[in-house]
Image (cartoon, rainbow, N blue to C red; front, side, top):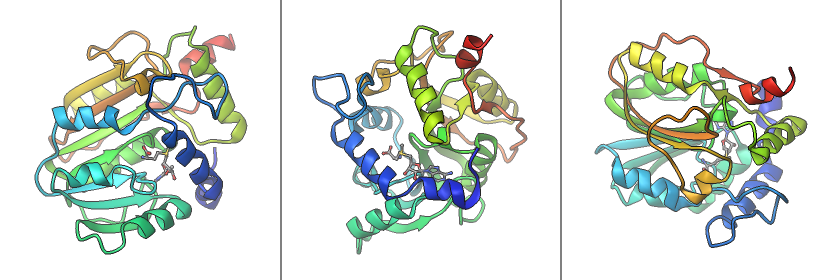
Length: 261
Ligand SMILES: C[S@@+](CC[C@H](N)C(=O)[O-])C[C@H]1O[C@@H](n2cnc3c(N)ncnc32)[C@H](O)[C@@H]1O
């Protein structure tokens, strides 16, 4: 697994162009991506907006980790929060700074790793991390998010599940393809993470589970945890200062590992 400068370099101009093209083609009637043949389109902003609408941000400020070029900043602005953004990628942060120069609601935009963000303890009322947690060292990242959140603060977090349906070929292709490209990729044991969060005194306010690859883009979800699912979106409320977690993520899904037996 890439670490340090090698990991940082992965998220370069080329990745910026790639992710921009995937976001640009999101939405509409057609389901299939024109960029990666055989794959589904990624989610458009409305999928996130629906969750934010149902579970609004607390008054005050918000940190987005993995903010890219500030794709979601316009959405956060509608809620009147002060916005801070960090991303590991220089290309992403340069683009965000260009778009949001002199915007008084955007308080800071900085290069930073999710696992160690440059803010004091209990600084934020809200933290969002969308389509990014799966690229990070999740135990360290979750600890860091809870460190910088205020007591009662809201965490909006998405990721990929460790147990997706064995017949979800798009998910399997994506996992194998990502590994081939050296894309940092971790799969979350969600029941374990939820159990650890609750044992540490934190609360799960809302859960969305997207069973198959492409369901996130289609906004097709279940709210009760299914046996197998590909993506998830949780709204978590910080309920204590405890961040005593074991590992709950792996670089290979259980679904993939079971195909190797
Ligand atoms: C798939 S993009 C998602 C961007 C944005 N959140 C969105 O939904 O459009 C993943 C983003 O996470 C950033 N990223 C990857 N690993 C990171 C890390 N360890 N710390 C901070 N940002 C990271 C990448 O540079 C990239 O901008």
